[in-house]
Length: 582
Image (cartoon, rainbow, N blue to C red; front, side, top):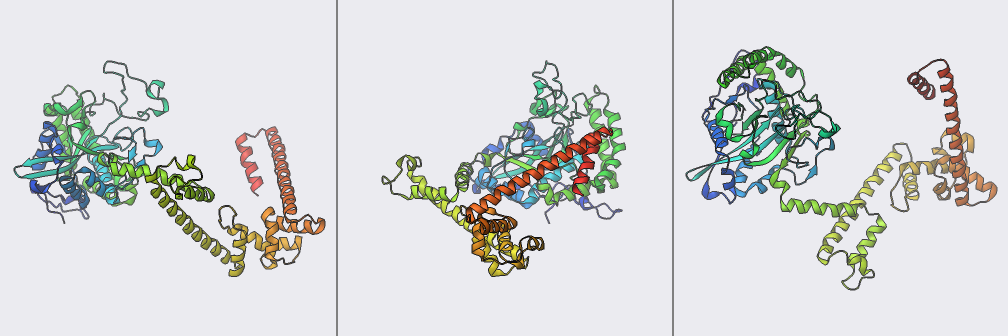
């Protein structure tokens, strides 16, 4: 159990069972002696003064008038986040990232790239619980904000994660936070502040790639300025910032769009969250949204006048938040959503992080570059792999093909040869696993083990060595009566053939019936296995084409007849599909 923040009281509300978020669960920020930290920590002390004052006042438990504390409580933060902070202090952000994110850089899904904050290259978090906790903060904001917030591509979908360090004599006080931007893409888009608004979806705005498509946000809405939220690890609480207060003016990037500048904080990553429409949309969320409708109506009435003093608007916001805080039903249902999201593996699948130190890490960038060599080797077939291995294995100056071997520098050869050996081992293991699966498939059909092994070996691919249960079963059906389907026995008799003899024909005819036809044809015309098998293959191809052509003509006749009866194309298609399937 984490110790309670020193400036907060632990409270328990009675009267409703199962109130998991009525317990305030947090712990103080990380403190560490300067003598035990490594270099590089100083840059995290360079938070802009206005932002630093905000963070430190929240840490003391005395939120300034422009920071409105959202009701409800978040689940306990994972211990990995505190460990991350300690590692940042002792070893720097690059090593801290290595303990939090996977050692792999991948590209974000294509349909999300135009929205991604921090770039399109991402790293997934190692532990799904960390990602799920980040996701729960988004839902906590959505459920407890005094204004409408949607977790979607034009509203709330990203946050800027930062580290803040405050030096206190011989100790460093370190905290982790996230600045969330909601209402990200309003309807208003201009080339400059005085320009006209570019229509949504227009060619000038990128057409179908316009990020505003579907937006319900506008800077003309009375509550638009309430779009910046901050979460701190030390308090495990979220506050909503009122950009009308002059104390925030130094860190407001754009007054028209009320954007708190993320560069006012020392960023370490961007956290993007794109859940499907149904994520968290259960009965608890629906009821919680219903509970706060009246509360939001009260807020709208209190802030409709955009010319009213911001102190009056702030009081209205605070009153609504207090009403939400006192509503046990809302508090309970909202908490269920946050806790469900924080404990669901599904949440982690929709969290995309862009950690700055990892994406710029030399070791990780080189590792990703070397992956291209591994992928190139994996694309080679067996013959090409042996050829490359022979070229690189020859001594310097003694190569049979110096123009080819000279393309690869000497110090890279040992690495490439090692990758070739790994690839060969991987393929050998893959073939063994495939062989075991094929054998089991045949055994499941009551085929004798020795017969199954012999058939698999005789039908093995000459070029790749891959086994096929399908080819083996067809060979066995052509060879032995006990495996031959009844309809083939009726057509071609019950004569057994030596399996190696039948394999010579099956190599060209492929299917069991075609193999039996090829054997009969060769017996009659003395063509030999290759010619008999090839001729039967051509006959089967011609017969198949003729069958398809008859079906096409039949369909044409049916469609013409039905159109003459006045039926639509849709009805005709359904009738035809039913008639063909039956």
